[in-house]
Amino acid sequence: MSKGLSLWFAVSSIMLLLLCAIAISHSAWLAVLLGVLGVANIGWGFVIKAKRERRSSNYPA
Image 1 (cartoon, helix red, strand yellow):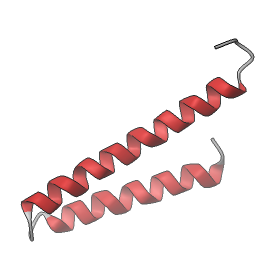
Image 2 (cartoon, one colour):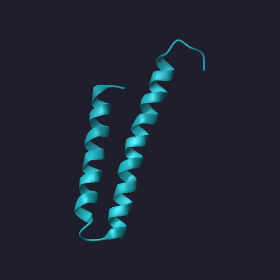
Image 3 (cartoon, one colour):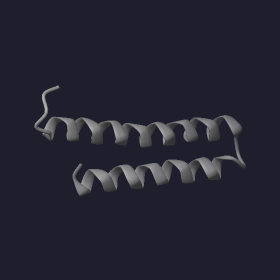
Image 4 (cartoon, helix red, strand yellow):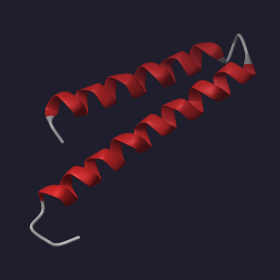
């Protein structure tokens, strides 16, 4: 994965989880939603990384 894309996933995940931490004092539902979005964003980053590595490998799919 390129450095720019890695940086994007890192920063966006940190922002979502930071907003989740702030939202805990305001609304439980918003905090849960932001927490799920943050974890999904992290997982999506791993999925994209795996797809790019599989595509760049020399092994047939």
